[in-house]
Image: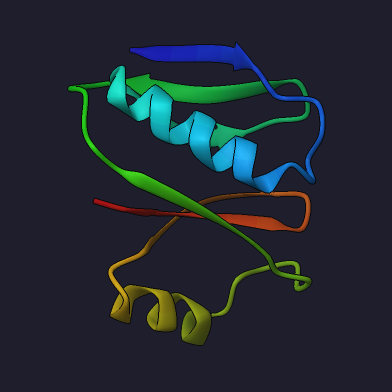
Length: 89
């Protein structure tokens, strides 16, 4: 089931966003997409996960960047603005 929540207003409060996404996952809401007004979650089993947000200036994350994160057990989730979101379980 898809669930929408209002997006926190300040993009630059990266730590707050990471904590919020992590807290939502503990409640069973897993991040799928960040829009201009709403954050899209999917309802699944609660899970202990960590989110990391990185400012990447390119329009798209490169394959090499994805590989670098994957080697450290981080998976790409989504992008909003100049920020890319990664997850690790």
